[in-house]
Length: 243
Image (cartoon, rainbow, N blue to C red):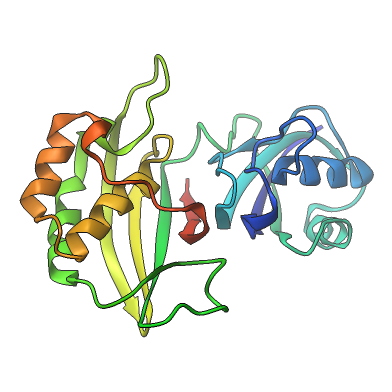
């Protein structure tokens, strides 16, 4: 018996999120089915983040308890031969018994990608949100500084009964490479829909429709009625989980 940590990358277009759902394709469902052919799991997969339908991951982390039929270093190759090509196991490592992909995580980093240009690109359509025209990056950076620290993000998430909306953001900023603009946020955890709703309001700042001061006021209201519409899922990536 061991406790095994897997790092995954996946393209979420064809899946109804990470978490297993009856009669629907999910990343967890595909991975658990493949695992049963090369291991004997005694637990479900525990994930660092339950990405929603259409959301991608470059560095999702999961763990499971059980026994392997081969060495941990050989597991990724065996699983990748069984998985569809839009899910890849990057690494496998045996961990101490108490390790848990979600509870042991110190921070998660998400990025939302915009394609900033005059015309949409067929090559970016699955991985970005297209914006026609330039954005005010200075004002967007100013708004992002407002979220750093511990705050109640009730204005930028969907509420779940009995769950806190307070989160601690360690870093937030923009990264521009040609026509691609990434909004990167690292936090101890993310509330449901937090990145997509936050970036929807941040886009209003970039378009000049909101000032950073309005962004601050919406956040302070702790009421998502004032939030701009959430952005679609295809631009969102779980980039990295830190332990």
